[in-house]
Length: 152
Image (cartoon, rainbow, N blue to C red):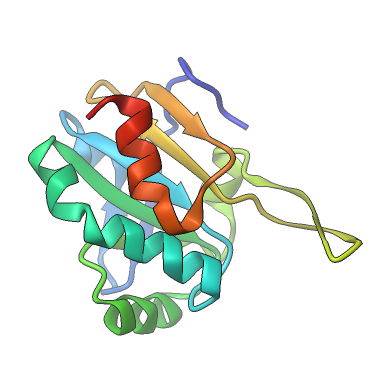
């Protein structure tokens, strides 16, 4: 997994509207890049809605929010419409971005061990440097978690 101080790897992917989104097009903006396991699950919905509810605040502070999961463009589109999400959700079905950021790994749930996407958020500076990593996300209060940690 990438860490604070690392240069954020550039990527391109398809968002929920079928548009190609690249990290490089956000140069000069701060990015909240969040990786989440699955559309329309309780934790992922809570996290997305927390970020949605603070999206205007983040925009006013110069941040853009981008979500990434291995779900399809169609799945992302339904998820974004259902929860009125105003930001890009990138469909990383081949796990290229997920692997670039090192957020695929071993997980445990109900005593079972398996591999999956590790819910993680990266704060990326205007210069493309990772300023903060959240490996432990408070899904219901994630926006507040970010605001408090960054002193916004």
